[in-house]
Length: 111
Length: 111
Image 1 (cartoon, helix red, strand yellow):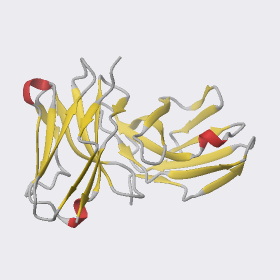
Image 2 (image 1 turned 180 degrees about the horizontal axis):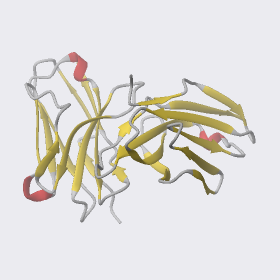
Image 3 (image 1 turned 45 degrees about the horizontal axis):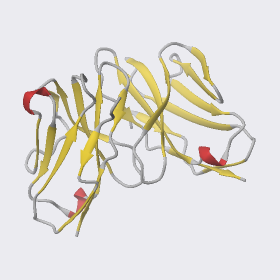
């Protein structure tokens, strides 16, 4: 079974630039999550989708972050404009109930 | 108060010893409990899940849950150098698939 696919693996951008991350969940998984993991901390949920609807985006900084999940499959997470404090690993995960399975993540460095 | 707290590390144990990791959670409605292992630079990987009070064993790993005390632990028996990683405790509530993570405990197994 193929796992959660994410791209790119690494990204370096200057502050105030924009960036987008892509995620393809495990086939058949209705729930998709985006987590942010800052170095030395546990993952923090940014947004949760159930099929193509948003279930929870309470911790998503909506002034700069946006996410969509078209057709209930792939998802993109965008940051515009980026700040230095957005430097982190962005993890996509998917699940069919419990548990959640994670992709390899995208390491973002904002300089 | 943080939702999920883990004992601060790092935890250093000699090869062959038992590593004991602790986690407490604040929400009494929490229903499902997970331990993820995260190697440096890698994504979290599920190693144990537990849903009811008591012990659950899987190979060298034992998870223990005490809902009255809001406490979950992970024991790693016969620790190996390959067990050196950060262990993340994750919790979710009934009818809610999203996970709340602790900050993680870093374990180093000395050969």
